[in-house]
Image (tube, rainbow over all chains, first blue to last red; front, side, top):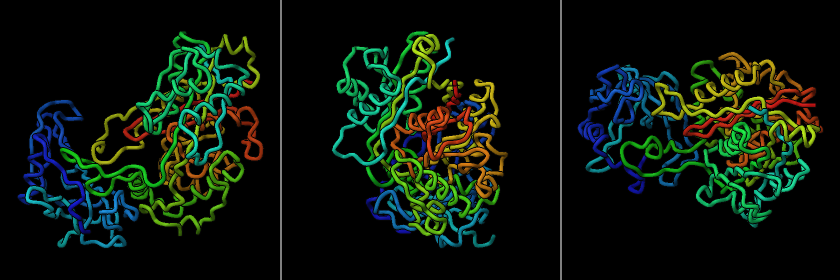
Length: 137
Length: 380
């Protein structure tokens, strides 16, 4: 899918900057709780599971599979180039991420499809973490 | 604590009324509910008003400016799609607490056209908007596909929900639409977010509904006649779930609310004769069959295939036409579905009457999330 300049871009905060820096560097970073070991996405100040304030950043393998998906034909704003695929990807580490599936026709999307992260640069600062079908699945 | 009864309840026909103001629509429903109870605004000791679009606009007070500024306390509620049910529940709570004996609850909304939800920019990592996933049809499409993942639920089964509810609304003159939509029409309608086609999305309409609630002593004093007893009133927010932060979870808070409501009423799902549930999208109705305990996990597809939730089936669901065809004016929906169930318990639903209805359930869920469930019982 193409993204016009007018699509609103994320503005990294102190909390989310490690994630966005990682995306720009080609690494998918996610928070993990040092106390209970659960993953947090999107970034949080405290663990939503055990409430410990011991969240650290770890690198994800960036590999996973499609947990659920939809193909949006009527987009929320005209700048989006419909139809496009929105998916929830279950990463190998067990955490979930809402994302776009790219390089994949809507009719080829299926639950369980093996996918890998694919960073798409949309500005000097921001690369968006999309997913594409895994080549060596 | 006193039991609480609904003495009067009504709704306006849902539609598009651009020439009317929100308070005018609310006032119309309020007067209808008062007439239904045979009471006057001067007898109401408090007013609870639900509206989302003008949540900062003191809608409840402006309703009273239309029908009588009696100086009573007014509370305005906003709780996403659970707004109307929350206003009803605030009234219920104030009577339960012994503060008032007669309270008016009003729910009203004027809606625009088009999709709900938009793409905001934002700090941090917005869950929605960035990905073009921020439309309600997409959110509920993903939730439906999760059900497909677990149980193999098909596009056709989701579409059958819409066929059923549109059929029901042909018998409801207060519904926005009275149009039959055969399966192929539903499945071939414009695709909005797979698997939800346009006919599988709720209708954005203007609407208003209102109810007069009374304490047991006041209800007995005025006569129980056509009264309906509130057996349970429950409101929940999301309990923590692994996926909370990725996809709005429409299931957990409904399951939590259903369990609490059955416990409060001393009833089980088998006791329920009809249900008005939150079919904001056809996919959602399938999920809520299981969330409300109408069938076991994984059996919802079978339930719709066998017609068990159609009028005449084991547990008719959304006999009003539901949000899919009656329409979904956000702040009014919660009280409008209490009106539908009450009408059946009173035996006044005409052509779409559910035979021998004694216990009815209403359910709404506002994303964010707020889930409200009411269990209602026939009195006479």
